[in-house]
Length: 178
Image (tube, rainbow, N blue to C red):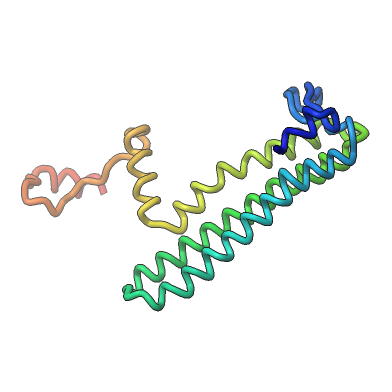
C-alpha cells in the first residue's frame, strides 16, 4: 500500500547521486516527501511508542499481581526499559533523516547531510543488541558465548578452579599467571 503513490506517479524511485543508491525520489514532489516521512517515519514511531507504553504498563501492572519473586519482577522491568530505550534510539536515529529528506526536496543540501542521516538511521538496528545486553544478564551471557566461539583468542574462557578434576599443577599455573 505504501508503494502505491510511487507506482501511481505521485512519487517515484530513482538513483540518488547523493547517497549512491536507489531510493524514493525526494526531489519529485515535496507533498510526497511529507507523505513519505509521515508514513515511513512518524507513524512507525507513534506505533512503536504506543506499543512500548502498553508493554511497560502491562509489565508494571501484572508483575506485582502474579506470584513472582523480586528477581523476575526486576527482570521484567529491565526488559521494558530496554524496549523503551530501543524506541528512543529508533526515534533519534530516524528523525534527522526525515527532516533532511523534507528540507532537501530542492536538492540544495550537500551530499554529506543525506549520507550521514541515512547511516544514522541504519545504525538504529545496531543499537538494539547493545541495549538488550546491558539490561539482560541472559543476553549478556549469550553474547559472551558467541564472542568466545568467534574470537577465542580475544575472549578466553575462564578456568574453573573449583572442579575436583583440576590438578594441583593447573591450580599452581593459574595462580602464577595472576
